[in-house]
Length: 238
Image (cartoon, rainbow, N blue to C red; front, top):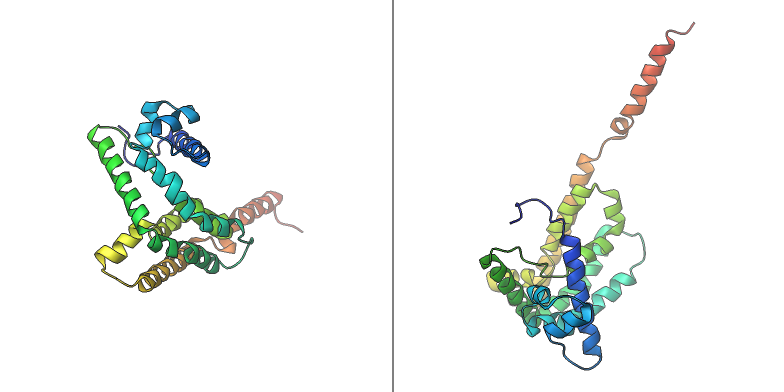
């Protein structure tokens, strides 16, 4: 069993395996046949046993390929057309404006997918195994793209923390909290709360980065120390 807190060295390979299964299933679906997990595994050249760990049922596979991916296509298109540079808060707002309406309009397939993810995780847990990557990780990729100018400027640790925090405002889990926990019936009100939360988290992350960034004087300290040493070796000048 993996030690908690340590990164899984096989994570990239697992993500590639999942992506290969999804791509193969999508191609089979384009040919007019809803694929089974076994058919997708054969097309992706992945063993059936491995494929069933990622997608235990045909329902789980088709949810990803036939419903979730098409639903978020407008978000992918918006990000692909996003011009470089710009204000981070405006870029984040554009991502939220593109995805939040989808989250609420597509609650049924997204809640169904969440049930499948949880069932798969629980089955792996009962078997004493690590769960495979249950999701594509769109949120992380979208935030990387939307906030690319900011990501380049922030230390990696600060960026990972900010991205993780902002991920809480995207996805079906946020809808569950707004609708089921907070009992906000109006979709627009719930969306407004999530936008406010995302903006507050972004500003907090920017403020934290500003406070922890080295001052120009501190950044130049190694250079000033080197100059002092060179001066000391030369001795006093006449």
